[in-house]
Structure formats: C-alpha cells, structure tokens
Length: 97
Image 1 (cartoon, one colour):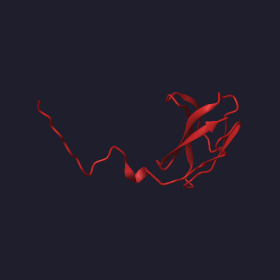
Image 2 (cartoon, rainbow, N blue to C red):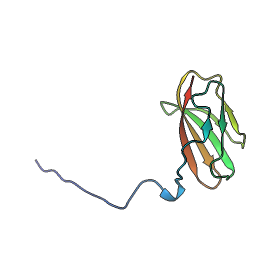
Image 3 (cartoon, rainbow, N blue to C red):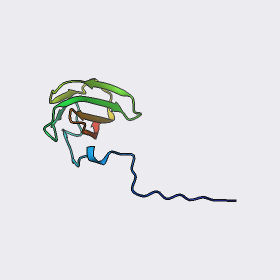
Image 4 (cartoon, rainbow, N blue to C red):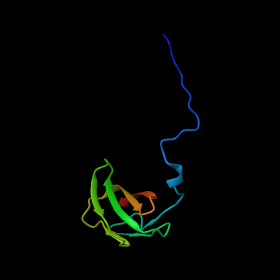
C-alpha cells in the first residue's frame, strides 16, 4: 500500500482581504418576529440573504433597510448573509423562536 501525503502552506481558498472580524451584526438573537441589522463597516448594503439550515435561500432583499421580517418562518436555525457594496460579506447564525 502506497500513501502519499501532500502539505501545502501559504494558500487559502478565502480572500482574506475581504474577511473582517465582526462579533455580531444582528439583534435580537434568538428572535421571533424581526431581526435588526447593524451595518458593521458603514459601506452600503448590497443585499441581505437568509438561508435555512440546509442552505436553501428563503429570503433575499436588495435594500439598505435595517430590519428583516422573519415572523412567517418556522422556528429553527438560519444563516443571515450580509453583502456590502465594497465586497465585504458577513454571515451570522440566527435562531428563530
């Protein structure tokens, strides 16, 4: 049996210049009706997307609104993705009660 091990250093699949450290940009969490979105960098919001835990897009809005209505969604875990005009992308896990 031949085993080959390959080590590659210095490469990532993520553009590290577009990744910013943000602890939280949504409140409240857990939420039951509305999520308030705080823009972490001040850049214009391009879109807000909400995905269910299986990765299916359940809501998308293209506006600078500071809220997203989740009142009609089933309780569970969702991923909120905030895309900014400057190319930054932020994701946060949301719990819908």
